[in-house]
Image (cartoon, rainbow, N blue to C red):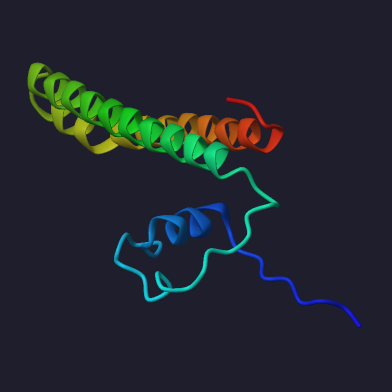
Length: 117
């Protein structure tokens, strides 16, 4: 007979360790004994989560700067060309920011999987 194994993500284990669910609310699982964490290094998972949060903040800041630059460019360009800047330019900027963010987030996950910083 095979033994049943409970599989959860590292974020779920971190939330249960803190006594909260994935949304940050107090968990109904808080009274349960903690799950054994032999399969994952919880400290490494917390470091990876912090790095991903930091990356998200940096990406949001870059988005604000890019949008401010586009608005400034649209204000400086006369007439209909300013509207064209506002209409067409944000999409390539958003696509580039998303591509960079995904690439960096995958690098954080790869570092975590390899046992890196």
